[in-house]
Structures are given as C-alpha cells and as structure tokens.
Length: 418
Image (tube, rainbow, N blue to C red; front, side):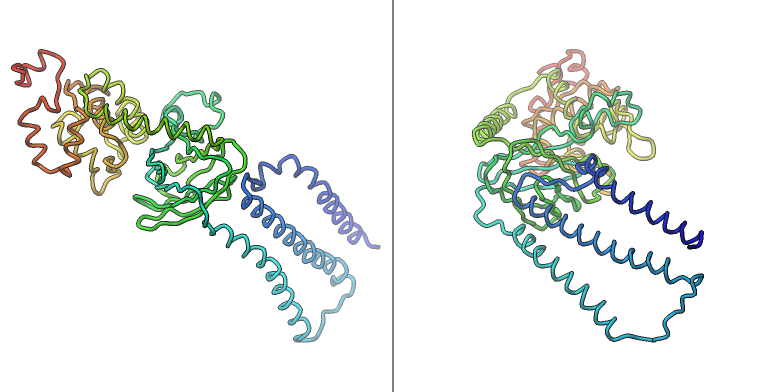
C-alpha cells in the first residue's frame, strides 16, 4: 500500500472518529442549537417531523459522500483506474429519478398531515386577535372585550439607547422582556387572528409552533393548545423596520383561575381608565405619567434626553412642535407626519397617555412652557376626527383643556381672570 493511500485512509478514519463523537458533543448543545420540542401537541409533531427529515438527510449525505470518498480512493488515476466509456444508462436514470421521488413521498405524507392539523382551528374555545404595529403588538381578547399593547420593557429600551451606560449583566433576558405579556390559559384551544396596522410583521413563538404573517388588510389564522404553565418567548420574524430587533413576544400560560383573575383585573382597569379620562389632572402628575409613556414609546427615536439623533430623528428639546401651539402638538402626535418616521399614535395611546406625554414634552427635556393638556380634550379631538370645530371651541375657552399652575404664567397667558 502506497504512502498516499495510507494517508487518505488515515484521514478518513479520523473523520469517522470525529463523526462518532459528535453525537456526544451535540447532546450538550442540543437545546441551544436544535428547535424546541415545545408545549403543545402540534409543536411535538413538528419537532418529530423535523427530526425525521433531519435523519433522512443525514443518511442521504452519508451515502452520497461515502460513495464519493470511496470512489476517490479506489478509482483514482494513480491506481490505474480507467473511466467508463458508456454515454448513458437507462437503469441509472431510473434509479436516480425514482429513489428521490420515493423519499420525497415518504416525507410529504407526515408533513401534509401536520400542516393540515396546524390550520384546523375548528372547535376553538377562545379567540385572540393579534395586530402588529411598529414596534409593538396589540392583543384583543375578542370574547372578553379586553385589549392592550405589548412592547419592549422600558428598562430594556433605556439600556439599548445610544450612549447608555446601563450594566446589561443585570438583565436575565436582555431585549426579550415586554411590559405586558400575553396571558393565556392552559388546556384551552385558542384561535389566533393575525393582522397588522402598518407593515408586514410575523408573530412567532417556537414553543407553541405558532408562526404566522401579520399583513395589513388581511386576517391570517392559526391556533394553539398550551399544555404546561410557563413563560414562552418569541419575536417578530419579518423585517418590519429599524426597530425590528426590539419587538419581542412573551406568552405567559397560566391556570384557568389565574387567567380569570387577570381578565377581571383588566376589565376593572378599563373602567378606572375611563374615570381617569374625565377628571382634571394637575401638571405634576401628568409630567410623571408622561415620562413613563415617553420612555416606552418615544425614547427609541428621540433619545432619553430628547436630543434626537442628528440626521435621523429631530430633537424634542427646543423644537417648534414641543414649544409651539399645544393643539398643533397634539395633532402631530395623534396623526403623525406623512413622509417621515413619525407615526400616528392616535390608535396606540389612550387619551390619558397622549395628554401626559404631550405635557411631559412641553415641561421637560429642556422645555419649560408651563401648559398642560387635559385627557378629556384629547377625547374631544378624537370625536371630532381632529376637526377644527372642537379645537376652535376649546381654544375659545382654554380652561377646558389648558390648566396653568403657575400664577405668573397665567398672567402672561392672558387667563388671570380664570
């Protein structure tokens, strides 16, 4: 046996030995590298299908590369091998056509069964509508009349900002936490309706084997029946804009009793929010509430200090909008600005949140205008679809929506008589 032959065989033996130890090495990294088994019947079937096809591919690869390696060793020119002289072989063509067809048929049968099952949302016990926004999710429990937004947790949002000196070691799931997780009961078949309000998103939770595009103007459907309580994480799986990577999903599966308590709490909070809209707020509490709203919704573009990002996002500190007419400021936040990254927040924020964040922007971040936007005036603008009529009537009687705490500022504003 020649030295070159011994060298090739030695290398082949080393490769085989490496392949033999790979399974043991893989066992320690399987959870990190492989797809999860999940906590639903469908997720387990998807995992089983995945592993079946993976094994078929491994066998095909081993056979193909085995034949290639064998041929390169024993049919090389240095051994005097002569190439075949035939031009074509009907037998070979039949074999390499029929064999892949049989393999594909063997894989397609179980795959089709799983795909059909994934789309069968009949007999669902509850429905959740999921709407994608840039860059948050809106969850609407159809039967319960409860809805809310879910987005990147404010602390994580602050930590990711340009120039932030936050110690990331304090976070267990950095940029994977949200302020309001989706709470779902275990043991119920849940139908999901997917759509979007602006661009295409995709709601993906691997542990539930749920992944569906959210397309504006369309409703896509799928379902899940979660068997185990726990927290299951996902993300937007469609490139939806500059903050695509900061749009996590957190699903918290809980027992039915805990879910019922959550729904009752949300309904009570909705009634409380209505009462908050109608009362008169003072500036200090609006500014405090507005800072929270700003950190959740505005900080990503305008930065924590309100200075914006030069060349990309304008500053709020000293801006014409935040220091100008308060009604124009409201309309800008409500309706957005066409042709820019400033989106409309009219559907994203409540009247209290809008009033508080406008008040915060006009009384913080280097601005000191001193005026206050009351939540119920925001509601008047909504009802009038930002028409001039409700705005004009409110301007005629500024005390309806504008409360100025400082007496000297009141005098300068010409409302001392109030």
